[in-house]
Image 1 (cartoon, rainbow, N blue to C red):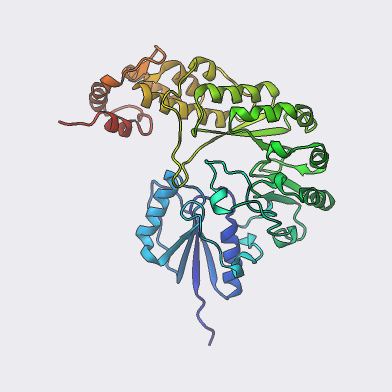
Image 2 (cartoon, rainbow, N blue to C red):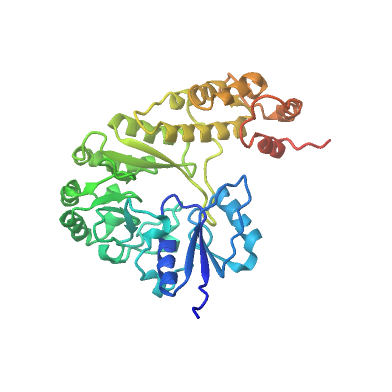
Length: 403
């Protein structure tokens, strides 16, 4: 008689791309004769369905409220029968060596668009907002070769390296990308400080691509205004990547003021680089350090900025500004609301028009002393569009109901 196969469920809690750890765990368990099931149920509005299995393994990439809620749901379902790993829950946990050495099982996600993996690990910088210093340590020699994670016939490769350009042997790696004619997505961005003439000439020959591998694009990061000078020093080199050929990822919500954000964003707009605005989600032990006087310049100048691409990403940043403004001043700023919802989510604009007491036309006027009154006014309304997400929670925190 054939032995009954054991089943393992691999839970992808919050990944935006195929989870490399789960890909390797899938290969390992299949080699042991296990039946492997992938679970990606992440709808926080509905309880996750319970899956019977001999083993449950979950990977959490990000330390976000959404991921935390998903972890709570899984723990409620499986208790101590589920094991969690990943940067979102434990920076010290590692795959066993026999799993780490496995070739990724891309069939787990029925994924064919690209291969993904690391050539190097770690980073010599110690940016406070980044998990890499604690998780990976200093930049190490090659962690793997392309042959360890790129299937035969696959041309597209998404690299997860933390700081590839800082690796002393990066020229050889770039040369290999060129020789193999790979299309490369530098998903974690490149460090502009390590871009020199020699590396620029090699990068120009690499077919660097966007995340969908539909067009040429190369990624750098600009997380603080002081780093603008690094871009200015290399402005002529960056022109060599072509018009709209450079994307710049910019962190917000960590330790910069409005004027410092504006300085970076306006610089990127003037240079014609493609912006990507990335919100900081606190890592273990490092809360955000946004200054109390974050609004230190004319807000109208910021909200009037426009970009030729990535409009939804910019809108996400403006929504973050909108939330922080209300928390600081106790009202929403009408011009910002009108910009936010004039095209998308117009039902939100309708709600604000029905609730003008939530709005202020006077910039930076503090209304927090009347939050209790505002809360009472809003509680009387039960019909019409739904209020902004989180508004009731913010009001409850700022103006507790003592009745």
